[in-house]
Length: 118
Image (tube, rainbow, N blue to C red; front, side, top):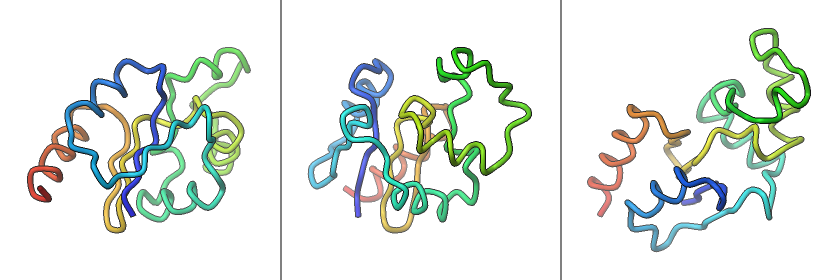
C-alpha cells in the first residue's frame, strides 16, 4: 500500500506532493473522498494515537467552539471521521510506515524515505 491523503486547496500539501515522485502512489483528495473508518484505523495502528493524526489548526475547532486541550482519544477519532479538515495533512502511508503532517521533522523523514526507496 502506498497512499497519500491530502487536500487539493491546501498550498502546503501541493508543495509537498510536488517534491516527490508519486508514481505508483494512490492520491486521495480528502474533501472529495473522505477518510473511511478502516483507513483511520490503519493510520491509528501505525501512530498509536488519534491525536497524532488530528490537526489542531482546523478551522472547525473555532467554528464548533471546541477546546482541543480537553479532547480525549475517542473525541479525536469521532472528529476525524466527521470532517476532513481535522486530519493533519498530508498523510503518506505505506505498508510499514506513516508520515503525518508538514512539520520539519516529518518532512525530513519523508525525504529520507523517498531517497532510500527510489
